[in-house]
Length: 341
Image: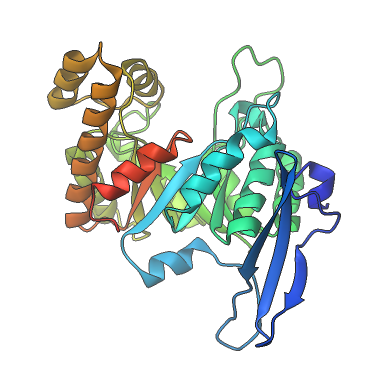
């Protein structure tokens, strides 16, 4: 399947960008995007492997083998009824901050499936940044998953975050009894992808107890997950205890801590309702103090996230994953206020 057939903004009719050769015979690639009535050209080099064979791909495991901490961002694609261009400016600004990789969310029930894959391919092809594609399974049959994996592969993407996911509100379709571990197994059979999995520092909301949650997490890793990205946590004590528990359970894959800056009281209430994150008293006091001053709350929220991140980096966490909410200014402020760069 070609990018042009899926509405990818550079509109080419081939599945790969145009290849050029520069005067030094280095491999250079060009892709182009049509935005705001103008064409934009993007150039990026084709990587060379140790044996001299040129290739464009990198699995995220290579990043963790090269450095610590690995810095990554999460973005979400536009809604199904919104134009693709609505997210491009945010992605361009985030790219300038030089993250090691960017993950792209997958709407509830796969509602943004095509745009998720389009955006991930755009990030990789236009900017040369590795993209981690979210993929959920609760509303996809195993046959559906195979088709999606084929499309991911055809788009030249190698990295997948395997999630069970949740059905959309008022969902009328099928709901499959497939867990994230089952999805990891399906992906791992292809032996082509790097697989990441989600982890819950305070325990999965549906787990009977932390011990059961760790057992399921280990099963996910044994099935093929090579990286764990934590759900949002506002209290580093939970993250540190979780890491200790993971090590005690014999899980040795890298852990990257998911951090979201607080920028509205309503946002935090919604997030905590979804993933069960605990609000420490310091954060509650901050929300109460600045609840009627959005600018002050945002500044205090960035400061809080920076303290969290610096503490986690000092503690030796493998990576920091910033939930950007497609707000580049927040991400820039966090990088400026931490020792990540």
